[in-house]
Structure formats: C-alpha cells, structure tokens
Length: 138
Image 1 (cartoon, rainbow, N blue to C red):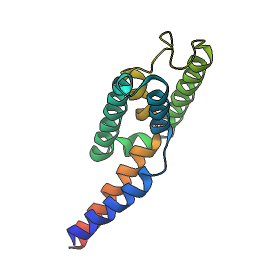
Image 2 (cartoon, rainbow, N blue to C red; image 1 turned 90 degrees about the vertical axis):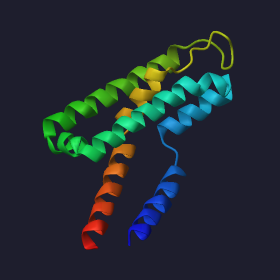
Image 3 (cartoon, one colour; image 1 turned 180 degrees about the vertical axis):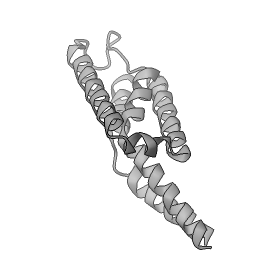
Image 4 (cartoon, helix red, strand yellow; image 1 turned 90 degrees about the horizontal axis):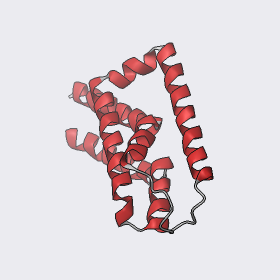
C-alpha cells in the first residue's frame, strides 16, 4: 500500500513538473541568455525557497498561515509587490541579453521567487495529506 502511495506521488510530481511555473521559466531564460554556470546562484536560491516551502508544508505552518485571512491577504500583497519589483527590475535593465553589463538574478531573487510561489507549498501539502490518508487506511 505504501509503495502505491509513493508511486502515485512520484507520477503526479513528474506530471506537474512538466508544467513550468515562473521559477523554471526564469531559470531557463537566465541559462539561455547568460550561460548555465552563471545561473547556478539563482538555481540555488530557487531550491532553497522550495526547501523552505516543503518544510512549511510538512510542519503545518503553511496551513496555519493560509487559514488566517489577514495573513493570507498580507502574503498576497507581498507577492504582488515582489512581482512588480521583478517586472521593474527587468524593464529597467538596459543591458543587452548576454552582455557583460546584464544584471543576473541572484540567490535572493530565486529564493523569494520560489518561496512566494504558492504552487510548491500547495502541492507538497496535498501530497502529504494524501500519504497520511493512505497510511491511516493501512
């Protein structure tokens, strides 16, 4: 029974990873314009943000935060403000893609981008609930 649950999670994860969100698209653009090596700090930030999202989901902090309407509203406004900041940063970067003057996304940019992305946290929460339900049935 546990094997079936893990297989279900693995298949669902593979399918969902096939639908890129903002982090994989930004990482692909960075790699294409600046080279793979220069995108590693951004990748590390994305992975660190994902790790924090997984920890939040696994410990129930994400559910607690989302269950509070005031906190949810503040998080939405923070995410919107960050997206506006990123859009401004892209628009204000006058350097040509691939040039030495082009500003690279940093570890911090990747971390915040993936931490504010609701998809990873919600997916991990869903998977954990599904595994717990399957374990309770056995």
